[in-house]
Image (cartoon, rainbow, N blue to C red; front, top):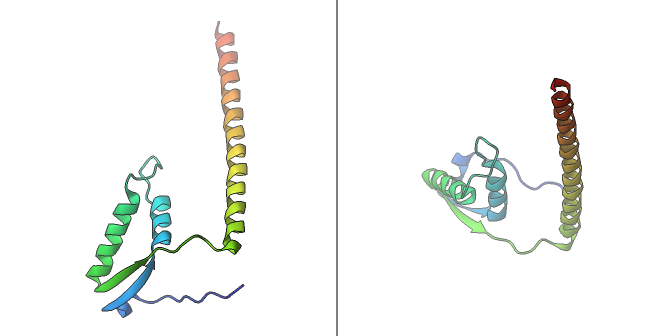
Length: 117
């Protein structure tokens, strides 16, 4: 639809400037990226991530202004629905694979137990 309008800028070029931050992108990033050693979401990841980035920006003398946009436009709603459907399909496939693996392991365990007795 439109070509990208953003461009990379070195943080030092933003010193003493006010910068708009898309808060929803940060939230999503922290919730997906901040995991513990077991792969589980870190409790309070969104708060911890916001705090760290805000501290970094303030240290660099960059003043963030957070933008919380409204609901997605109609065009994006279709994309979001398709993504949700795809996640549901992938989840069903994952569950079937797990069930098959567990069933096979159980059968092997039963066969080994029968062979030993």
